[in-house]
Length: 215
Length: 215
DNA sequence: CCTACCGATCGGTAGG
DNA sequence: CCTACCGATCGGTAGG
Image (cartoon, rainbow over all chains, first blue to last red; front, side, top):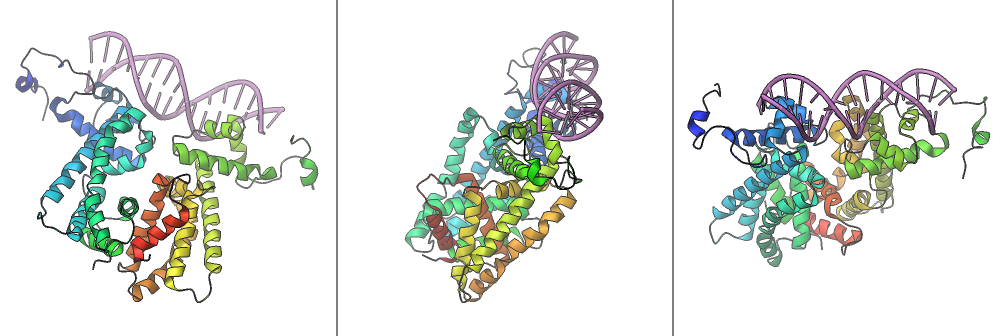
């Protein structure tokens, strides 16, 4: 498909670029696609290991064209993390929302673990690993920007963990348990293979077995 | 201290460099010191984020002098991981050896967890985090070279985990439990602060509480 | 180990 | 978005 006529459907106030900054351009979804491509490159090679030329080539663009959409390479990293965190938060809220209001701690933790594993190792799984493993490369301002969503994502685990701690199912203190559990799940990005013999559901159950002796 | 006379204690077959390759030089412990400095730089900035100039400066050398000791930057990374793995293996063997021969699974796991946490977050803790987080950057040959020690290190966990699984203390399958536990412990490098309110011993106990309900 | 240097690659920009 | 380009930095080397 050629792009020659795409303006026809977009132009409303004359021709040319909208008066947006590079941070906000998303003509024809091209910016979103670039974020996906960058996420994959950053994950595979690391932020410093993936050059802007690598990313442009993977997106079928010329090297300099990235900077029509992004102010800098760091801005691309920031965008990857923002998009990823926003997807993860939406996915987690949906997973919790699908539970019965009377779901117990085990059921809540299972939903959270299953969703987090899906995010870590499923398809479209590049965003959060990039965020976790390149977190320190954000500037203070950028980090603060993503932190709000990140904190909320993490906070949603606490009621389930506290309930399990109260009933004695969870033996570690909830806040430390959360950190250790996140570590265990985040690390699956390093070894879990979707094509392997272990399914996501089985991995979820094994995780619950380890953390709260459920099996 | 000046280095002007160090040759006096070393020279045995005339003056000048020993006929060693860059890979084996370690005059006056300078190479070992470089490995420590590089480990710190790699951990703080990542492999690609730390330039050979950064490392040389941190070691008080001129930029090009590194290549008197190492064939390439990748060789430095490899050396960091080899040294780290060798230290970790020695430390773990010592920790297990210090146990009573009749120590049970809980005691064995406690010793392993405590030792691994020490390696991850204690002083001199740069080697293994670098290995874990930059593992993919090794060439196939280099990876194979470190893998033997790494496999042995990991294998030493299995008897304890299998014993705990048999007695019902551990509810997850030993091999998966090992991967999840390593993830939880490896991730502490991202959040544990030695100056924080949580001590290494307390973290060890909380970990055991999470994994096998010990408290 | 230092001095002096090189070719390659990088992130980014001007102008259209 | 592309073309053409720039200054900075990088890993690495020759010669001593």
